[in-house]
Length: 345
Image 1 (cartoon, one colour):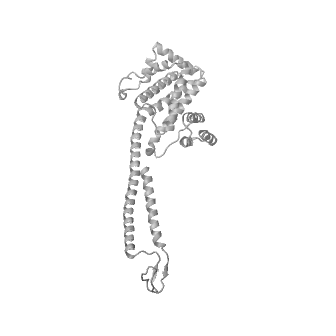
Image 2 (cartoon, rainbow, N blue to C red):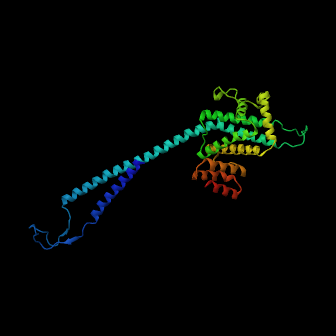
């Protein structure tokens, strides 16, 4: 920027200098009629009668010299101006090339992380939400051969949450945090991740209990991340039959069966988390799909997202712009306006 400022100053200075020279030449004093042949006060012979002279006009030798000097100034100044303009354009081109290289590098990394971690987190969060909803909506009537109850949905939900934690742990070990296309998206996803554990502990499970359950799906935690395979539900169910783990699973199942507000809050957090993370990951594939689709969320999920935005991001145009696009899928106009108004404060 200093080079650009210096160049602009030199260009303006050179232009003013050339303009002042041209102004001095075109605005010389008007010609006057010389008197009859006479002697000046110094005794020198004056111009013949009828010959036009200009007051203050330099001699022919001086005029020729001044014209040569200005022509040289124009040539040198024009050449310098051309070099300066080229340097400024080269500077802009270098900056754009550097930005483009950074974008390409980071987009490649984001694609890698999305395929390795983020899409798996989205799928496991959706799977946990779906199985929790299935278990909490079981009919009160006893099961029949024609309408059996999916009593294992609670264990499937716990298996999905364990796999979600496993993917999050692996991503943090490799990346060190959450890396997405926007800072606002990173803040929302990180905040929602932090809400999952406190909500699960309301079931009576401690953090140590959660880690013990997560260990069931990470038998190869010491190996390279590429060699780790997700433990299937059948293997997880078999490992959960151990007396120590079985007690934890029963505690989890009883908490879900109570159908309390905490269970509904966990479902809401998992749903909002999966939608926002999917929205962020899909931003990098806009060139392929040709458009960016807004996340489909219910009013409660949108309200939670705005709450996370207000609590974990500073007031800025970026977060309002982010929210405006994210809310394009909201059909309730009044709700959309209200949420955007909240994001501005």
